[in-house]
Amino acid sequence: MIRIQLEHLDKHFGATHVLCDFSLDINPGEFLVLLGPSGCGKTTCLRTVAGLEQPDAGCVLLDDRDVTQLEPRDRDMAMVFQSYALYPHLDVFENIAFPLRVRKLAVSYVERRVKEAAERLGLAALLRRRPRELSGGQRQRVALARAIVRQPNAFLFDEPLSNLDAKLRVEMRAELKRLQHDLGVTSLYVTHDQAEAMTLGRRLAVMKDGVLEQIGPPEEVYSRPANLFVAGFLGNPSMNFFPGRVDAAARAFASEGIAVDLSPEPMARLTDGASVTLGVRPENVELDRQPRDGWIPGRVYVSEAMGNENLVVVRVGEHSLTCRAAPEMQLDFESPVWVRFRPDRLHFFDTSTTKALWP
Image 1 (tube, rainbow, N blue to C red):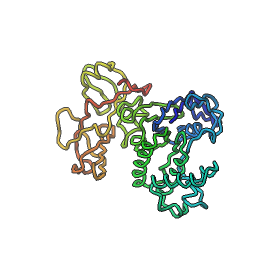
Image 2 (cartoon, rainbow, N blue to C red):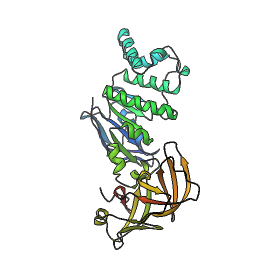
Image 3 (tube, rainbow, N blue to C red):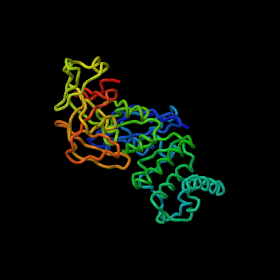
Image 4 (tube, rainbow, N blue to C red):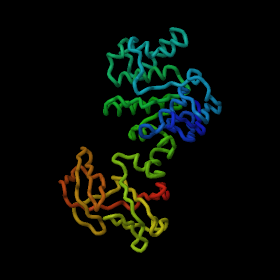
């Protein structure tokens, strides 16, 4: 198990600043997920760790040893790609064995290691098939087996589940998490998929435009986002936002068509008249068909049945508000409803800086 440190990395592609003073510390044996939208620099970061890209500034350390100028083959890292990158003319056995063949290891050792990896990933019965004879999930398992057969210092995953269908992605997520737990190898996983990030990572690092926005355990990043971007990017559906002002006399937050009574704790922290953005996640919005004192009136814009729940979009004043409702709550278009925000689950952000005002 190794420790991976990225210190003040900078990288440009022409006029595009891809990594901006980027630093990251991955503990030995940790599964860290790098999450962000397309084009934010996460794959460039991964390729820099692998040695496939050279930074313009900064360094990559493995167990405190500077490897920034070291060739990829000398870093002993296994990379698993989105495209599987299997050799079409080789069968499953030879695809898995390839990194060991390159090292010219003993035939008996290669056979033993390949069979162990294939057994672990449920490929024992497929060793003589070619990649074209495999499903997407089986191909991804072959790519994983080829990575683990080397017993590398670290795993680097570049959106490896993106080409799989929804059901297979869920299955492979579970397999990946168990595999990394069993092997205990330091792992850096790149994705734009929130579900993968939340379920796989011991820690989650959120990127935007080459900058690290927040890092921490997934549940902490979700429940205590550092800024508007993190709050909006994590969560499906995403957090609802309402720009407005604090009204100390009314002890409320006021936005166009919305007034939200505030408890003493946020009132003690917010400045009267301050321009803030209120955020509330869909699961923290209560919904009722009947009018209730202090609740906000609205009308159903659309309701989507998801099986285990309904996602309801409500028009409140000039705003659209997404909330989760029980599956038995069937609502028609334009139905009158009343909503309430859970007072202990409100988020406040400075509208000008976008930063969270506390935890």
